[in-house]
Amino acid sequence: MKIEIHGLNKIYPNGNHALKEINLEFGTGMFGLLGPNGAGKSSLMRIIVTLMKPTSGIVLIDGKDIQKHRKELRSMLGYLPQDFRFFTSLKTWEFLDYSGALAGLKNKKKRLTEVDRLLDQVGLLEVRDRQANKLSGGMKRRLGIAQALIGHPRIIVVDEPTTGLDPDERIRFRNILSQLSQHDVTIILSTHIVGDISSTCQGMALLNRGEVVFSGSPENLIRHAEGHVFKLSLTQYEYERVKDRYNVISTIPVETGWEVQIVSDDLPEYNSVSVIPNIEHAYVYFMEHKLHTEIID
View 1 (cartoon, rainbow, N blue to C red):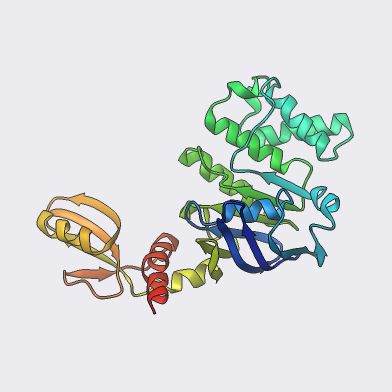
View 2: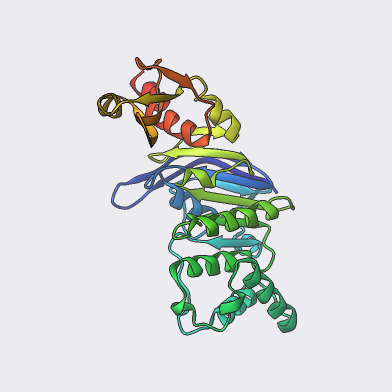
């Protein structure tokens, strides 16, 4: 499976240029799409799943234009939108059963077996008979995840999938996607939560204001922050000065004041220790320093 995006633009009637000359290419496995709210991620997802047409540009799946092969694409697609809705009159299992029928699972017995397997996988088997509209916010999100997976789709598109999930649920969902990505499946994960883009993503893109500002592996993004992340031990007075001058990543109270991690282009004037960056450090550094510097240049 190969997905190619060439020269993609989306301009809404109000003049908002949501996507600007997007060019990306990726294959099987998990591809992460990271960026702040309003970066254009949802617009790109809706175009990929053929719910919206681009103003210009093209998306190819195995060489086929998705706008010309919409029916074929939708038969291999699982999609969890950011704003997930369902039929409130249905029980949890009934909604997933209906989703399975829409996904092409015609054999009733096999479909019900698959329904219970997925409900168990997302931790909803015990509430299978509860009406969907009576589920908690996190449970509703998990039901949305299950409907995106039913029918064994070859392409899974999930837009802000961990919104509303507690930390344990978020880990559960990441594990599910990680397991799926080991098979011949393409997973596109769109999120503004940096922790959702983990080592399970073979590739990723960083969007900002409708443009791709970085494309590559998470490891390559992290390399941009090497030598730019520091840990400082500060008094209260020093901390008040530091928080106004640097991008503070974390703040931990200690006996003598504060232990603070920052990202900076320059070595801080206070005693500091260099820190090996993670993807959260890299995201902040890239968005607040490297990207800003390149725009000024």
